[in-house]
Length: 373
Image (cartoon, rainbow, N blue to C red; front, top):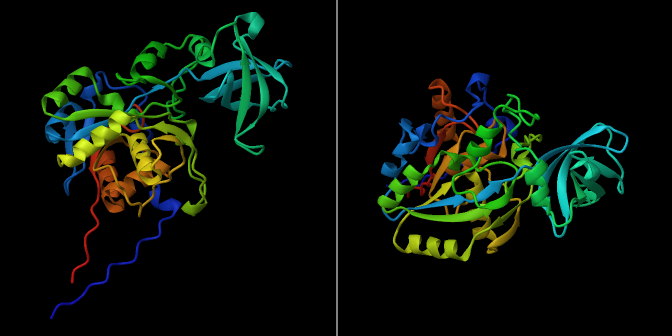
């Protein structure tokens, strides 16, 4: 007699399920000496395997396709002062049409709409002025919309490049954004991918920081194709989830684009039976946003938690993420909650380096088993 087994009901996850204890000494404060000399935890098999990143080409197959996020981190953090002399700091999240930008504002007492603040010394001191227009995206929005006024012909991107500082993540505690930061030159090179193209991110797509020209050449030699998408990573990627009920979390919005050439490459990959390998969670969010919406460009606030039905990505290369973060939820949805828990326990025991300048892991999408009959 054949006994039919009923699948167990899906587990209901809460914020606490994605918490873990991380020794602070495992939070990487500097990049590895060489990009591809970082460690790679191969999490595809039942037991994780410790590797070095430059071994990646041997882990993929001819016909597979790597998809990168080609966004470029901009010098989005700029210091200034109000007319009263009070200090403030802007973190420019997005450049709008004309000379307008959207920014986070750090200041003791927020100015009112219409106020002019003087950035990097102000227009008459070698910098530029910024007029506060409104909150964004609505009147209760968390960000602020400014109109920038600099020397004639200078765009917001020009002003950021000239006066801004690289916005390193908050958990990199060493001195940063100071006038004479001793690590600024290293960060300018290493907190940027070797193929960064489209300016607009305030955080790097960190899984791609491990790639150097040697690894890219080896991948091409193995018959692995490359394609790119763009998602301009926002500061919201570092914001912790604060609601125990995940359904109450408001996901931040980011702009993305999937070029026609990449859409064609994805179709070729499927036709030949290759696997789509997403480099980083931002690439996953971009590809799965496109698959869900049918829109090749636009804004996405996709929130991927366990139970999500992936349509595009087969393998994921990613760094290790913050406790209680939306990215912990994404990788748990992708590879399976229990597997991710085991991988993180292994990584901590083996003293892998965590977060943006840390090591990486290779994950395979969990396949939902069919019920027996």
